[in-house]
Length: 175
Image (spheres, rainbow, N blue to C red):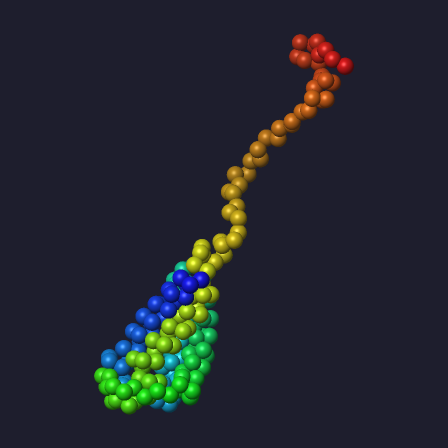
């Protein structure tokens, strides 16, 4: 379980950190406040839901990935709201395209990895890490050739005493 949490943490940090760096350093969105912050957080949650856990390109995993992405939208919005409402903290140093003293929930480079890591851990805990979906837990079926195996009769000692005459016509001794 702890290894799953660690894997989810790393996957979420990579997804969230990559998206946060892309928005802040690539698009030069140093401060995303208000609705834009919520929209970015929801996009990060959806992306972490799709990419963390079971790979969406595996057999029948795309449904699971879409559902986790939709849930990620809601959970990421909730995490962003909690962070911006109850955990205010001004960054004492300047980051690229953001001045010192800016709230941490306004910088995608800081809040995106947090959201990605938290939701990545939740999604990875849900992932079983075993075989692909429908075959897991089921016994494998043998391929039928259409022919039955010949039935054999196991005789007991009592049945041998009353055996039919042999091919030569003699009766067995006994009884």
